[in-house]
Length: 97
Image (tube, rainbow, N blue to C red; front, side):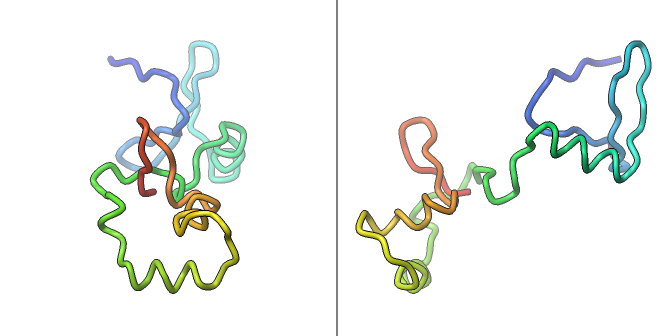
């Protein structure tokens, strides 16, 4: 037996099933209950997950400039990415999500 600490993520087994601990029982959630559980937990959205191996240098400058041109921002060229949580500050520097 093993213990899974509480986290922001919803944990699934190898079959993709989600279980919740109620008292001394584990209960498998059906699709509707799982969706509600994820919303209650406030699980982060996919586009807010930091890609640990990605850097700002991995972004295509041409695509980034085309993206930025579609918006009006007075700050840095990275402001539109920050506004859409495509870049998040982590450990004192910007991380790509």
